[in-house]
Image (tube, rainbow, N blue to C red; front, side):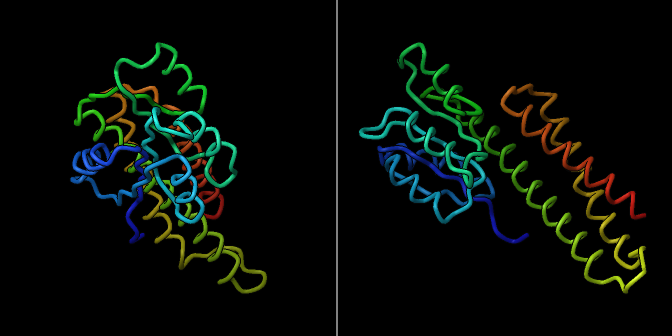
Length: 209
């Protein structure tokens, strides 16, 4: 996989977008700016994003309404959203953020290290999911496309697939260990989902071995 993960930064203030890009500059990702909810929805039509950092307070379509549109679309509903807002926001903002589908909620001014750490883990999860999807597709293609009629054991392909799947399993174990050291409830669902997918792929692979 050669493409770097993209992250959508949504804020109506230019200085906030510049600050976010500076905080995330050390990570291996491509930041994409959106100055409004409408602009964010347009960007999501043709680009795949690993994560969305979404400001709550914006003129016109605010963060909650933008998130609602994102979660209604089949193509974008599973993209993680982290809401960002100022510390003096209404007391129910956090609840509304989670109700709108956010995986996390940070108040400004936030600790750059905390934001960078959270984004880093979501990027790793996204990249692992991409690799897992690629291995699943490769397994299906090789099993279906390379075997002669009546032959049921793709021996020439299995060692390479096993090596790649083992690498994904080892990386998942490393990320889960990091999550245990710094508990973050926002990561439990995506980590659990990824673990189930890895387990299912391993079971399918073992059935062929």
